[in-house]
Length: 355
Picture (cartoon, one colour):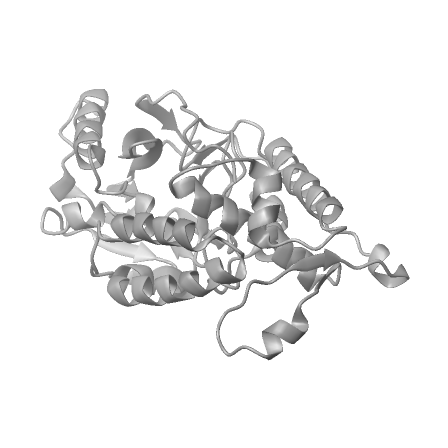
């Protein structure tokens, strides 16, 4: 969990693939302290939008302005109603929330990976399930009651920004290919996250970002997330992508050196795992680990820190490097219980390398 409020240069930009496709980056302020990028692509006879922003605040206005700027750059009108496809890299609201604004304004066919389909088509159900799991997780993590309610209230407000929308196809059903676009499933940051390739250019969504390590949450909350899935997906991407000419991310600036950036992200998690193991020489909760890793945070960043710390504790526990010290308390209670972890000091565990 890094500081997502660190501001990149929010500028409209144009790129061109080796095959002649034109790409326009549309920056949008998706939340008060967060910017994201959508990408408008002109390829052969198709007009394709990759991600949509959040639909919150100025996000929709920035999206419309991006179409206007793309029209001027292309020397012809490019209208929302002329879109052929909308491709969603993953099911987080800052990337798909704009679909609520776009529905009724375009007949574009909307696609997403199967594992994130319900986030769009059964949005209310997904939010209800996620909130129930989050309540229990915050208790288990040792978050104080007053802080738990603050976090839940912030979570609820953000989730009221959207509603269920129609999806026309899923990427696996299309064989992970749509015309000139190829998709790679990279679970971890989100269950159905994909990286999209067009000729020599990648669209990485939030799987790889240029300035921050993408947020991680434990699989305890959502299947096919978790640090283990994410690290495996980094390796999968490295083999599949090779050395693209450029990688266009969902936040921040373009990535010119993808292999180098992947190495930096792996090192960031190696360092955090090492700090977590060192701290857990004595028993601690996930909330205490979060405070150690990220210091004092406020607002939505409290949740981000608790989830990120939990992803690292979960990973170490899965790999046999941690144990729960209050098992008796867990066994004697039906509901969620504050859980404390401690490093295991035995010869076998010491031979395990976190990454």
